[in-house]
Amino acid sequence: MKPNLLKLSSASALALALAFAFSPAYAVSVRWPAENIEIDVQFDVQKHTLSGLARLTIPAKGLKSAGFLLNKKFTVESAAIGGEALVLTRVEDFDTTEVTSVYGLYGRWNPSDAAFYVGKLSKNQLKVKTPVILEVRYTGELHVPPDKRQFSRDRIAFEVNGAIGIEGIYLSGGAFWYPLLPDCPTPYSLTARLPKGWQCVTDGVGSVTKQTPEYDQITYISQIPTTGLNFAAGPFQVSSVQLDKITIQAYFLPAEADLAPG
Image (cartoon, rainbow, N blue to C red; front, side, top):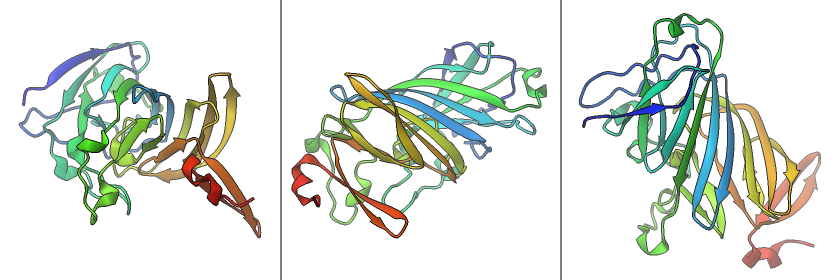
């Protein structure tokens, strides 16, 4: 498959070598360490879409080649490493055997759902020895109409890895809903704008950081490295109980609200 070259937005002379091999099946050299990933995302639940900005902090020392995976239905609008233009190559025909195929108990990596993005920088950029930040702006749609879904009682947990709609939002790591580095445990911070009154569940410790008449903005920070970020949101009713010094919460959809105690 002939790759499509995408010339993306400005970037600085910092060091990210996204080298790629000219072969029918591209090597996915994604096992490089990220010190942190910051994700800022907002949703249009009526249109089943999201738009996001991801900032990946990576150590430059010893970095020679790398790349990231993103849902193949998504569009990368721009990529930046400072003020120097970056050319990315979108590759769909890559060696999926280099990516672990199973993720967790209730989700599944399916590398064929993702596109592999790689880029190549100048020799001067490779000389930088300090951590660098790769910024990626992207948009995408995640929606599978009920009549299009494949049902299996044995594999019901693997049918839908991501969905955005007026009923709620479900995003597993296997949806490739942000620039993903499989098998690379990384701390995360996530900021998301949600429809007014919605609650969310994700990794880390969170709080409401902004409220407007149209939306609530939440921020969650997870210092514990994880290989994939899961996120769910909806018009939940939250019920909490305290057990010793541990808070246990249950999230009920409107149709189940009568099950919530008290």
